[in-house]
Length: 310
Image (cartoon, rainbow, N blue to C red):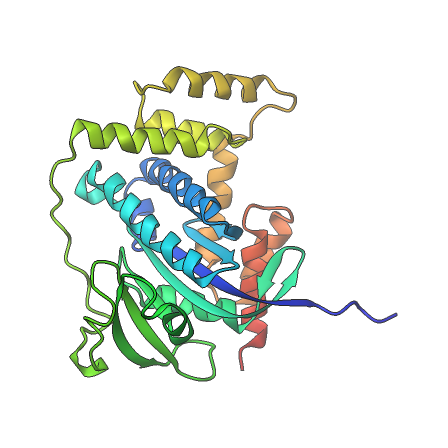
């Protein structure tokens, strides 16, 4: 009996991760996880608002699909702007800066997960982005050029891991007019140049309250205890602290109780140790230990990448 054909579709793919996540975990695991949960509440809410669908998460990584290239780009710009406001309320050594890559391409779909070169290219674009920045493929640039109020910096052809042909990369410049910064690749800064740490002004009380309201609005219907724990960690005396604690109490009294936070931290540490591995056995060990784990989909994608590599 023949297997049913894989579904294929053309979508915009957004891949994101946190610059320096391992370093942050090494210095303050609990604080890093709390900030990550707060930032993820913002990103997840914005992805949903732009009609995107999260296809996978792994530690600090996000993979999402959009039916519209414009929606994916606008979502990425809003993520970086809102997280910039959230970071301004944190100490400089606690800030988390996302890197985002966006590609448009044909992908394979299986059990709601997406696979293929279109996904891999988005992940490689994210790796080329600056902290707090966005890199896009030529296909994305061609879709939105002259139709959005953003500029583009041409980074030229880039050879990236596990992609047979070089890809043309552009850095999206949200604060530049369309075409203003589109220079020959030789005039661009190296993609390896580390970004200068901005010196933000002290956020006003109104700005801090606005961030708290956005945070709460993004999690108030959540069924994940970690979201409410992250809120209380960030705002122990916040306007919604009582409601957050009530929700946590409800989870704790529910049948089966809440997952032991220590168990989740062990799984996170395990995944963090193998997520960039080129050894199938390491990823297989994770799947064997956590067959229904939080990072199952990403582990399977990574295994598929390794098997497809020449």
